Length: 288
Image (cartoon, rainbow, N blue to C red):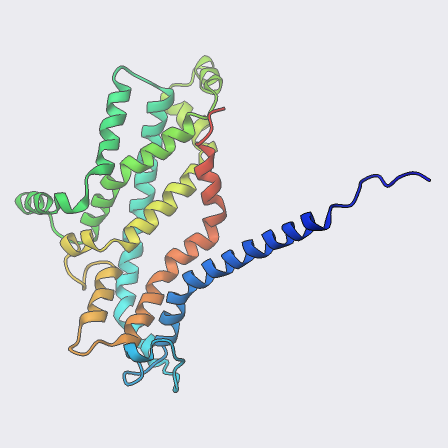
């Protein structure tokens, strides 16, 4: 009688694999709970009235579910949400397009001193916001530029160019040079090559930089505080700050509701585009 095609695994090896799987799932479950605990506190507190919402009752469910906090938070934040959308959409798209054009020129249409230019652009990534606030404020005051959403769009576009250029340059380095050379042989110039050949295959990198810029601009508070022109003309982060500190007694319920409302747009962006985010980052990590 023929022997079995494959011998069964030893019992000790089987137990080792089982324990390894159990440990992996335990660690994943612990990480999930660690991440979701703040969300639980936000959600539970958002339904508590003023008497129940206190640090001593943080972990307890509300005795009376109060939905008025959500209405109050929406009334306070609705205008800021619209202004934030008017801020993040153009700033994300403009900085992405400029970063894409820079990355293409610096990787495929090189010129003398390209490495120096790239280094100087990247230098902008290492300048902390706090170090330039006073000079920027003095400059804008001198040239009499008004504060508000247009000014914030300009700020986020300028500060977004270095990281966008880096991501796009790394991605375009993986595109075969023969593709660009073929376009040149066919008579395409730099702009025609970019728009007809390179731009259509740049979707993965655009997803990465748009998610990055959208989140950065949406969550920004420092630029908004200096150049937003106040809560009535600034983004949602200023309105959320006023909601949390606008009274003598802290309104924890409305503050938590506002925080959840303000986080919905970035959550939707990650849910809709998150599966492309890692793929877009990895697309520029290997040359070939």
